[in-house]
Image (cartoon, rainbow, N blue to C red; front, side):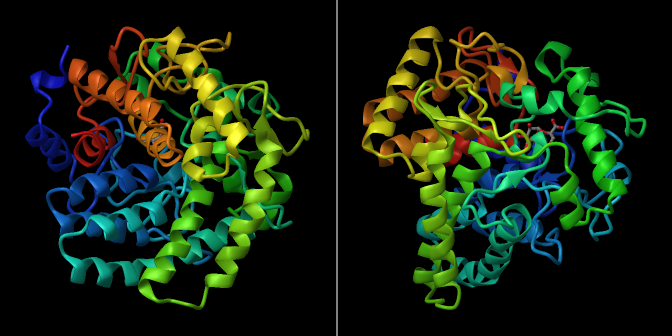
Length: 424
Ligand code: 9WN
């Protein structure tokens, strides 16, 4: 069934973004997610740019208003309190104005800023805003290194599954099993008021999500305490691939804008990161996998996040060929690429959120990466599969990878943005 009866056209995609506009920032979808999310807004900005450039830049400028003094850009900015979403600002208990969450999300912004600068029809506005945002992004990348890789290994840690953007991925089953729930403020779930429970994380996941929030809040969100005491500390392939790509784009931006100051520092991040990725490679899975810093164990599972090695540009020829082979196997097991968990894995659940469904923003990143590596047939399949999914059911949040059923929220911003900026 098509989302709210709307056919999939450029005009309707624009309408989704307009409907989700809250005056300078875009919510992912009404009610279910009524705030500004970091990576959603990054994708929305690319969509806005195709028909309203000033509004696209405004999206990124509003994200910058959430940046903490230490450089972190939080994963949610609570511009206007809305009881439809939980956990709201009170549960996080951070002290920033505007109120924000206390963790981050995959840092897509430098890559998107570069994309916008390259696609602009208004060079003067683009350059002016890029100059304003560039230092914000350098501070954000510096924060990842200082707070999340203080030992300078080249890979950054995440402290919460929400930071990966892939909340209940099967990647997190083992490390989440070690998160104690003895410290847990009472909380209420709102998501299942809108979405069928079999498409959302389980209660056992939410208990642990909220136990982590409660613990970090009691530690006053102090980065050093969190580094020392977090019971969830993982090297996530998605975050590291997105950050590595964004480092390379930040360096390109510094060239384009003629800003010399930070070059050596950014080059250092890139060099260290490139070597460190070998720690996350799994020949068995044919993709990158997470590493649990608290046990030292790699977490063997194939996921779409692990396929972002193309997008990061870190895979060598042999690894790239192995990833293509794995993706082709996945593509024979389901009709539509790229399922969020390998369909050959027992933990694959085709309807449950990040445990199986296809996600538009991830297809976009994998498709871009595949094309850059010269795998044009597979790149085309990843894009065309997404086109078919959107055409069959509308601008949904995610899809069942064989039946093409649209799942999760409808009228979804990053889906409309993907349509406008990458597919149509
Ligand atoms: C928690 C907004 C966000 C996305 C994430 C997605 C989901 C939130 C939630 O929605 O996460 O951050 O409440 O489920 O997993 O990727 O950014 O669309």
